[in-house]
Amino acid sequence: MTTLQQALAPSITKAASRQTYYTIRFLADRERVADAYRAYAYFRWVDDTLDASETDAQKRIEFLEQQKYLLEKTYQGVPLQVAATEENMLIELIQQDGEHESGLQVYLGNMMRVMDFDARRRGTLISHFELNEYTRWLASAVTEAMHYFIGHDSFTPHDETRYLAVTAAHITHMLRDTFDDIQVGYYNIPRETLEAGHIQPQETLSRTYQDWVRSRVRLARRYFKAGREYFDRIENPRCRLAGYAYIARFEWLLDTFEREDYFLRPEYKERKSMKTGLRMGLQTLLSLVHLRERQNLASPVVSRSIRKP
Image 1 (tube, one colour):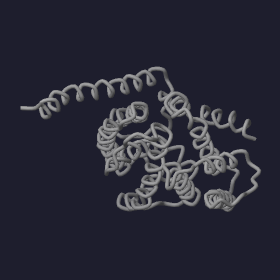
Image 2 (cartoon, rainbow, N blue to C red):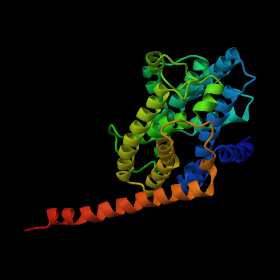
Image 3 (tube, one colour):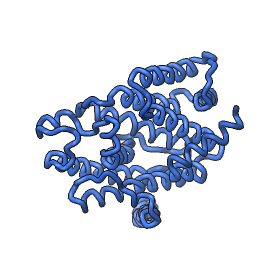
Image 4 (tube, rainbow, N blue to C red):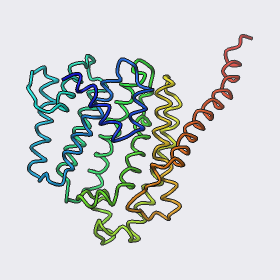
C-alpha cells in the first residue's frame, strides 16, 4: 500500500497543480516531501468526490462524515480499516505527526471544515460571515501547511498578517472560478449583497456584481501587499520563495480583472500559457530582488546603531 501511495500522491498532485507539485518537489523539507504530496492529494480526492455530478446531497454528506470520523479517530489513536488508498494517505499522515497542535493538524482540521462547508452549501446562498469564515479556514490551513512542510524549524511571524496572502489568493481564486462554481451550485457572492442589489447570483453582468468584484479585487490587492511583507520576514529562504511564487500565481489575475473593468469571464485559459508562466516567474524574481534591496538599505543603519562610540 505504501508503494502505491508513494506513486499515487505525487501523480494526483501533478495532475491537479503543476506549481504545487514542483513547489513540493524542490522546496519542501526533504524528510517531508512524501507527506506533503499525501496532504495535497488526499484533499484533492475529497474535493473531487464531493464535486462529482453523480453524487447526490445525502451521499456527499455521508462521505464527508466518514472522512471527519477518520480524521478524529486516527488522531485519537483508534485503529481503523479503510478501503480507499486515499484514506490510507490520511492515516499515514496523522500517524507520522508527532507534534502537539502541529501545522499539519491545523491544515487537516481546517481543510475538513472547508470541505464540510462546500458539501452543505451547494445550491444555497451564503452570508458575509459564512464567506469570511470559509476563507479564514482555508487561509489558515494552507499557510500552516506551507510552514509545516517548508522550513518547519525556522522562525515565522505570528501576527495579524500571517494569513493575508492566502486570504487574498482565495478571494482571487473564487472570482476566477465564478462561472464554474455557479454551474454546480456554489455561489461565492454573499446573500446580503444580492438582496441589496435585487439580483440573482447568476447575474454576473449587473452593476451590483461588478461593484462586488471591484471591492474584492481591491481587498485582495491590500492583502497581497501585506502578505508579501509577511513573507519578507520569514527566516527560511525556501519558504519565502514559495510564498512569493504563491502570490505571483494569483496576482496577475487581479490585473486581468481590472483591465476588463471587473466583468468576469467563464474561462481564463491564459493562466496555463507560457507567457503567464514567465510573468509569474519574473514577479517572483522581482520580489526577491526588492527584498535584497531593502535588506541592503537597512544594513548600514543596523551597523551604525551597534557601533561603539
